Image 1 (spheres, helix red, strand yellow):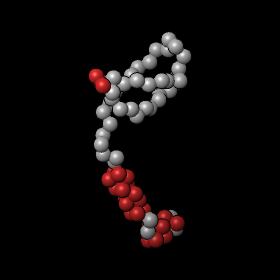
Image 2: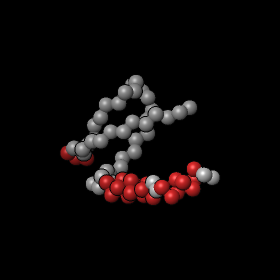
Image 3: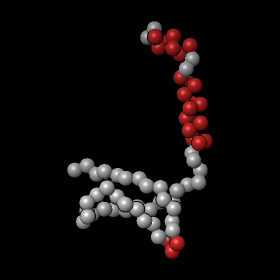
Image 4: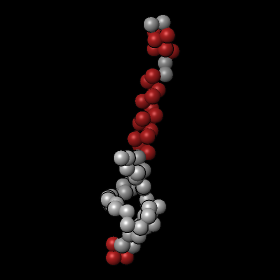
Amino acid sequence: MQDTAFKYKLNVQEDGKVELRVPLPKGTRVAVFVVKESEDDLGDLVLAAKSSLDFWDNSIDDEAWNNA
């Protein structure tokens, strides 16, 4: 059996209340995880991942692998 995950980004309301509607029939058992969203958008990690790809883009390495 495969589980389906739904992700919702919500703001906590007064008294710590969070309310949402899910596309599941009444009576369906669910597990709920509440995680505080980081204020960092992870942009620095995305930039680091992109810059490390430049290592693989070089003509010397391409020539060596093309002739292997």
